[in-house]
Every structure is written in structure tokens, then in C-alpha cells.
Image (cartoon, rainbow, N blue to C red; front, side):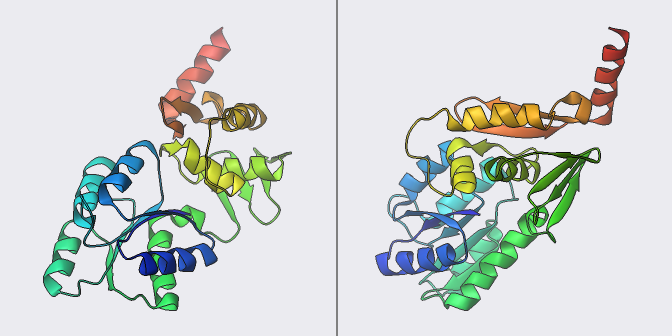
Length: 242
């Protein structure tokens, strides 16, 4: 998962990043709430870890902004030296999912983050396989079946497909896709993602006939949409009479 961290204390920021990186997550770190807020406006992440305080914008201000724009799905955890009950209550009232005090206890903190991610993204924490419409994903074999027929995909193509199909309806920025599929942060403009998405659309027949549409989102990335049965039936009817 891709997690953004706001933490003023550099030692605690590095510790939190280390804990989450060792758990397999990709981390973006900030010491300034305004810088983080601007970055989140053009990128996407799976979770926020916020300091109660912050330069220019506090973690609480970032929380309010995120909840207003992105709704309640993204988990938000506060890790702060402020141990007052008042701050914790304000955080929960504002939409936070958890609140822990600094310094964090590594094992407990890792498990708190894992619990929040499992709750927010249950399809991405399955038992190695999942079904979406006519598609079956087998994580252990990195295999996709379309209506019972296997589709030959490379490892990169499988990771890209499973990312989209476990985030239906969600806009995924290009840097988010690059980090999750290629395992590193997106640093410069490249047609790599666009080329892979175009190829994947063809390989998996991602179209209205199969109930999905994979669409570009201007100045951001891509979004996989699941079409209603009415839309799919109408498309098939038009094709039959054409």
C-alpha cells in the first residue's frame, strides 16, 4: 500500500517510515502540512499517518480537507506527541480512524496500520484469489481467468490488473500506479504506464461487453468503472442489431 506520513519530528518520521517500509508499504514523507496537502491534490495514496501539529497546516487541517474531498474510505491514523484526551476526541470527531502517542511502539503500530488497511480495502487482503464480474484472479499463480479461459499476463501486467480490479471506481494517479506496480516512486514523465494500460485493456477485453470501462482521468491517472447491468445489456443489444 502507499502511505503518506506527516510528522514534524525527523526522528519519529524516519522511524514510522522504517516500520511501514519493512511491512512492505511505499511511503511518502512530509514535515509540512501545506506541502502534503498540495501533493495529495495531484496524487493518490491508500492511507494517511498524521501529526496533530504541523507547519503551515496541522494534521487536523489536512484531515478535514481530505474528508471533504475524498470521503471516509481512506484510513487516517494520528501519531502525535499530544496525548491529551481533547485532541484525540477532536481527531475522532473530525473523521480519524485511530490515534496513538509518540514514540510509537513498532509492532503495535504496524498492526494498527494493517488493521485499518484490511478494513478499508478488504478485497486487497484476501486468501490469494478473488472474483470480479467475469474475471477470476489467482494471486499465487498470478493468473487471470476470463469466463473460465486463462489470459496470459506478465508479472507486471498481473500486478497492474489486480490493482485496478481491487480499486473499482477509484481514481489512481500515475505515480500511485507506478509505485504499486513497479515498486518505486514516479519521478519523471513516461509513456510506460499509458502503454501498459492500453495493452492490458486489450488482453483482458476490458469493455462494456464484460461490464467494465477503464478510463483515463485528465491530469491524474486512470479509473476502472463497473457498468450497471442495464448499460451492459444495452450495449449487447446494440451490437446484436448492428
